[in-house]
Length: 154
Figure 1 (tube, rainbow, N blue to C red):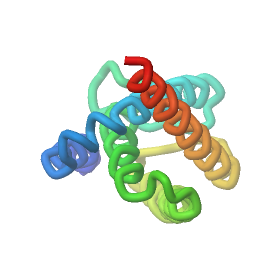
Figure 2 (tube, rainbow, N blue to C red):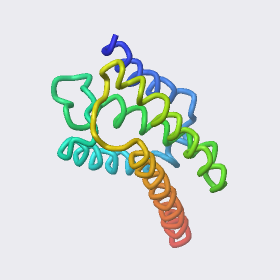
Figure 3 (cartoon, helix red, strand yellow):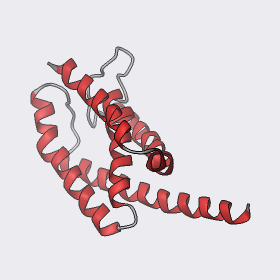
Figure 4 (cartoon, rainbow, N blue to C red):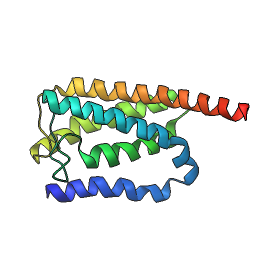
C-alpha cells in the first residue's frame, strides 16, 4: 500500500503537466525549481535533526523524499502560481489552507500508514511551510522583474 501511495504521489502530479500549458510552465518552472532546491535543503536538515522521516520510493532517496520534493511540491507550485500569482492575498490564503490540510489532516494519516515519522511539532512545520511559500513568492517577483529588465535591454 505504501508503494502504491508513493507512486501515485510521484506520477499524478507529473501527468498533470499535460494540462498546464507551455506558457505557464515556462513562466513558473524557475520558481518550482527554486522551491525544489529549498525543500531539498530543508529535507536534509529534517533528516539530520530527525524533524521528520519519510521512507523513500527508491532505495537511494532516504533524505529527500522523491515523490514529495521532486514531483508533488514542484508541480503543485506551478499550479498554485498559475492560479494565484499576482493576487498575493489569494496566494497566501491558498497556501494557508493547503499547508494546513497537509500538516493537520494528511500528515497524521501518513504517520498512521507509516509513511512519515519525526519529532518536529506540526505547528513549527506549518510555519516553515508558510515561510517557504512567502520566500518563493518573493523569488517569483524578483524573477519577473529581472526577466522584464532583460527584455527591455534587448
